[in-house]
Length: 108
Image (cartoon, one colour):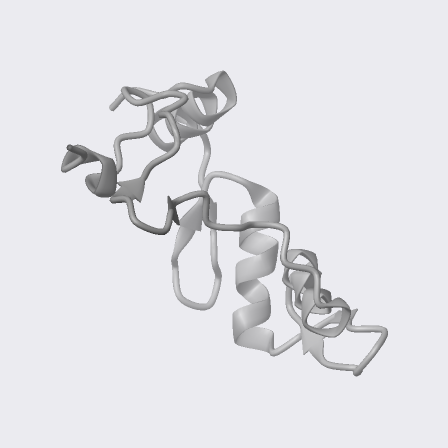
C-alpha cells in the first residue's frame, strides 16, 4: 500500500505498530482514541451535537455538515460538462497516477 500524504501513511503504520483502542462493548479496535470515542456513541445513543436550526442531534461534530440542507450551500459541483454539438468534455487530470478513477480509465 502506498500513500500520497505522509499523515495518512503515519496513520496506517499505527494499525501495525500502535496500541489499539478497544471498544468495551463490542471489541472493535481503533488506532485513534477519538475514533473510539465516536464509536462508543453508537452504543450509548449519545448525540451531543445539535443543529441550531432544526434541533436534529448527531453523534459526531462532522455530521453538522447537515446545516447545508438549511443554507442551500452546495460547494462541490461536477466539472464534467457536455457542450452543445460536441462530445463529452473532461477536465484535465491534475494527478492521474495518484488518484486513479475508473471514469478516466476509459477516457478517449
